[in-house]
Image (cartoon, rainbow, N blue to C red; front, side, top):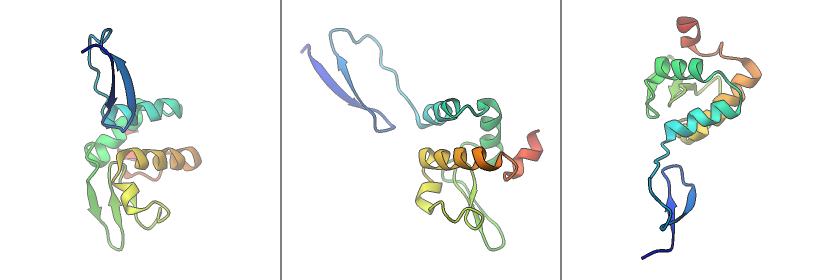
Length: 119
C-alpha cells in the first residue's frame, strides 16, 4: 500500500515517510543524538566523546560508588556536587547530556576525572 507512515525513532521523534519515495531506513541512536547535541552546543565532539568513553565506556547505566556520593550514568554526574540533577536524568543519556552541556558551558570540563587523563 502506498501512502504515509509514521515512524517513531529510538529518540521518540515521529517522522512521516512517503512510502512511494522511501528507499532507505536510517536509524538514529541515542549516541547519534548525544553527538548532535554536543555539535549544536558547539562543544568539542571528539574530546567529549573521549571523555564519555573514559568515564563510562558509553554505558548510560554506569555508576561508581564514592565515599558519600555516586557518579551516575553516561557522564558520571556526581550525586553530591550536582544534586540538582535527578537520578532519573543522570541515567537517561539525552537528559544527562543536556545537564553535562550546562555544566560544561558554565564550568568547563574540569569537574570530570578523565579531563586530566585525556588532555
